[in-house]
Image 1: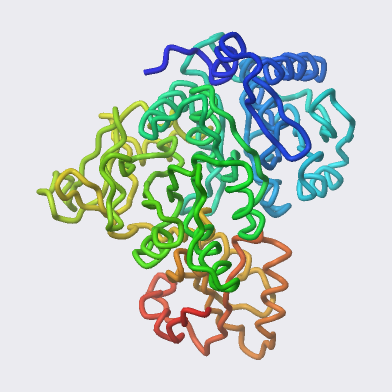
Image 2: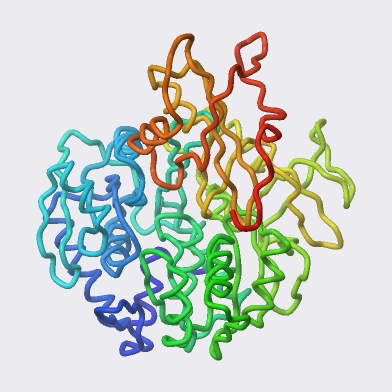
Length: 509
């Protein structure tokens, strides 16, 4: 277990040990550990001058960048709470998070993100050049906010708050402590034997738990170099892996599918990156066909992992020295505990399917300002209920399905109720039902809509309507207008059998 007090201390250690070693690399600039430490100190002064106090919630509407890293660490140095928000969320979604978290300030990484810039302008944020951070958008100071109670330098302080909508469709702020994130970073780095000479591809969003704890913190904790990218493109990505001599690439299944499609389009059967030693998938179920094809293309085992935001996030991960050729997510994360329980709450024997529960230093502090929802998922013994169905065989975990209706699209969580809530507000819609369907290492979002009597609207019009209210990755892949959606006596739409109304997608799709 890490003895560091704050997540920012991963930088301080290497700024003293190897000050000139590169820490963060972007196409336009590289920061050494010494420079990163100096930028954190400079950002601390700017934040203090901007009215940020210990215990304040500060929203970072962001994409991966050096500026994001410096701001994140400087906030935690001040014992403020960074509220990490993906800049690609829709305006309505960002407004909900702002309303729920009550931030002292909202900061936008406008230097790297057109999406963040758009949100900043909508918020009338002042965009200015801030030292080495580049152009940063600063929202208005909310003087009436009350800071949280914090114990200076405690590992139990909140180091990041990441919002997940949950099954209710309302935003829930997952409070992850310094202890949570440092535990995860250390374990993840040790599993992969990360060393200072490693060059890690930082393309997973650091506004989400894997990108934050496993990629960012796991890299810097070991003094390695992180190559930052705000988004993934298979053409430039393939070149990048070779040119920058990347050694570790952690992605979501959809990224590997894009590489496979690019290889097919260009007509090559091999993508060998001489320095690459680890490729790993997480964030969504990995299909066997995608795993096998990726391994054939890249000449490396595609490792697999599983987790949820509330567990910082990793619960299980395949080991480098124990490669799997099936789609098991491997052994339980070191230091964490799991149990598989039946409907009666009692553990089931190995090989039998049950609901997965987790306990350990990776389990969140709780949901922000939601004690009842926290108590509903973490019992008195500290066990977190994932509501996912799983089984254990020979010490390896297999995820069988989801007890909840979560859809994972492009590695990001999509809850059907969020999409349904938007569609149902259209004046022509009586009710809707949204489900997920696996396709090529990802999940499609399928929406079935029943129109109000006498109403008329096209699927294109409904798609355009959804696009104005939802983040890109939450928009339905296909909308189908049906004569009637079957409902229960209580008015709940019966979703069983909806997928059969559509033909199975072809490999080309």
